[in-house]
Image (cartoon, rainbow, N blue to C red):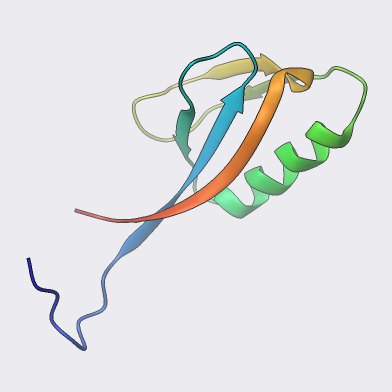
Length: 81
């Protein structure tokens, strides 16, 4: 498919979470993904375990995990359908 020049393409940002012991990453959508990313990044630095509960938008309704189980974290921009 050819993208037309001058036509802005809508994108959405996903927060992708990698947990220790999990084979697949968890993809979550939020109203403010930058804030969630920053919060989880700070929790990764903390040596004290903290119980984290998130309510993303989309197919995942609630997610609960311990902050010391975070193996990696990233933001991904993807085109909207």
